[in-house]
Amino acid sequence: MLYTQLKFAIRNLWRNKFYSMINIGGLAVGIAVSMLILVFVGHELSFDRFHKNADNIYRVKVTFKFGEQEMQGTGMSAYMGPALKESTAGVKDYVRMFTSFNEKLTFKSDADHIFTKNDLYSPTLATSKVFSFFSR
Image (cartoon, rainbow, N blue to C red; front, side, top):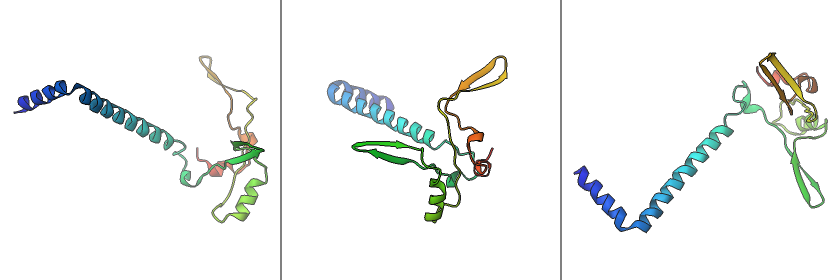
């Protein structure tokens, strides 16, 4: 019975080549897009999940407008943290961090493992509350 159904399906595919190609192509594209969405969502949800208060830690982004041009970024005044804590009921505390993109940090564990990294947040450029926010 399975043999006859398989033979019937193959005959139907050969008889209607154009529609079979559209259906198989659509199925392949649908599966590929679904897998890409799944990988993207899994990647986005994997960041900083090791912190004990990860659900309560947020990063503030701002939008700057210069005439008609609009830019987004995370750099803002040092008074933004205290102002947000005072004016917004949901903000319990804040920590300020600064990164220098011109500075290169070199890490060396032994002679074979040396690497240089830009754009790292340095603990010397953060407020002392940084260790109460982020777990190790």
